[in-house]
Length: 373
Image (cartoon, rainbow, N blue to C red; front, side):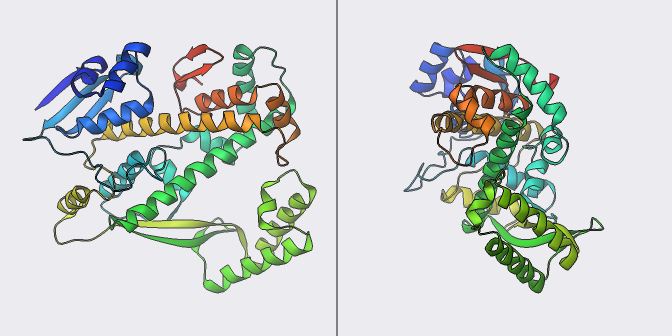
């Protein structure tokens, strides 16, 4: 059995008073509100798919349950210490492992996020490739939206800051999800140190190699008068010199281009079978997740996660914009903060890299198909 709902119909049937008021006032729901609504839908339906965007979304609910089940919110510390989009990340990781029949090789957090559909080829291209073309397109978008904006060659510093902070934040969230899933005995999670050789082969590093890397790092930090926490100050000449020599020694001593943490995850083995085992764990209420996602459902959940992430990311950007005394800020980042253009540009970057479809800047609503960028 399946049934289609417009967003308004779904809110009317399953929404809370706050969600109904929000829809009435704004004509739409935020990503967070929509995610909460979908959790309520799953108390009566086994799955759903979402087509369309914004207020024009059509939600198709599938598999009517014989009786309504309780929402998985039984934890004594419910809501405390939760990550943004934790329900979605939990579910996407579990679904990925099910789809792969639990046969997954160790991967870096970046590779995991790419496999889950959260990082796309555009972001990966900017992360590892030449960023010039991305900067040119971004400057074009910014000039159309922000008054008094004067483009500069060192706008690349803002692009670098966005990629560095965003990638680091989402990787940390994913690793935290791995830890929580393992603690709840949903998955087995092992972290290994892998390296990419000068022949571009990826392999697990031996203990003596890991110790050698730590020794090289410690020696060079002392030589340049640095501490580990100083390395994020990328413009500092000592940091640049450290990274240059560290990379050289990594190649000369160990034959490695770079090294990274790789994460191996598998769903816990059980005599019950995967689905029965996961059903029992979910019923315990220790961790909030769903599974058995269709391809459409998984795609929709990925978009919900991206929207939730972007909302929180923009909130934090507005807070950083007020901090004009951050010693690690580059000259261009400082200038954008003073001009109050830092947060608006951050919002456009979120849109450019397809984390949100609608960006609000200075009461101006910018809409469009993100696939056009």
